[in-house]
Length: 527
Image (cartoon, rainbow, N blue to C red):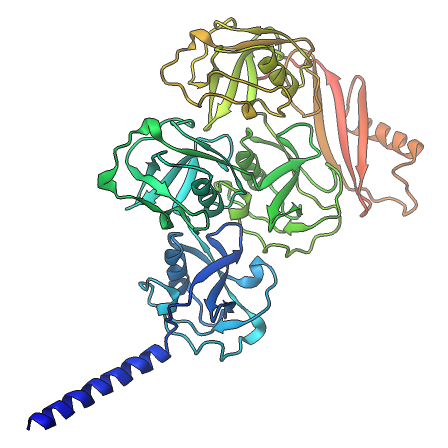
């Protein structure tokens, strides 16, 4: 009887083991497997790849849904899946196809725990591969643009800060990559971007630098946290959006960085919501003018984004809807551009070019302390505003006290900055300073710029017109006599009185994008 029981037990265990092997044979589990997202705008978006037999391969889109994508996002520490994408959205792909017909319940800790067809023994119909865009649990706030600021992480549905203990460029690199910015430039400690509020979620963070998300790094548990908000850490990353060939740091042709290469944005369906996001991402003011075609010059390089559609609330242009990286039907020299308001102004002076210095930060205008304020700092302000050289740097609220926050203290400009907010400061947001020491400046030239603002008593009002002309095919826009005639027609049509100048830039499709500049005295000062 004892032998029978032993035999029965052994047989039962064998049967159970065979069932386990069968289940494992139909799953994707395996110690050597891992997951990554490639060719996206961040480490939390891209084409899904899995590692098997030391070879990275793709996942077929057949049957791919949000449950599957959620597992990938969670495994990478990237929060929840925001959107499922065909991998062609992230550019062309080739190589091994490892998985098809992936079926996850959504609660798996790894994609390798989900059911799928056997490794590599499949064909992906139409070569459609799986991609995903996750919603990162890390963000930067109160910075000078979308790629700088105080680090915040989301935990239990609440945003909190991170203590600066032990932070270096390795930790910063993980943050920059997770949120879709470029390389880490600098770590800012001691609440450089202002003190946060609420919970401090992480302390003693230690990253190797290769993690897909900050939550994948080592850090102290919450109960071991001995920090306060004066130690909130901040990061400055390389921006992945730039404005080129413009009048200043807040105008120009829009270019984005993808896969280490800069490229343009197609102007098809380019509108105010798209421009709003660009201005916000650059740390500039409100969108002022949208430009099309080759207004800021033509380039024959890569066109990265086409048919962009933002709602205006996005933090970065790359998080707006568009056709996919490098996917477009754009003709040559159809480049999107913007002119944004500048993030610095002079108020309560005798003219636009003198007054109390105010900067736009975190959506609010605030002042600058006169601590360390000198001619080098003031010169950057004058140049950015198109006001020529500096005459005098003023302190002690010479132009009256401001009413907003004191944003900047101990300003230290090198002198060659393209924007005043790029100058060094000890840190942003000084709650312990009053407005008795607001800095001011007097510049030596009356306001004269081609940005399109109406300021001061003697102004240059620029109106940007896009004119589509039906002309004879032999019409030459570079013919002085022809354009002189057109100039007179425009002057008559627009009923312009007084002197004005007309310049133009041509496009290959025969359209002419006009600039009409008229000198006049406005009825009142606009600010």
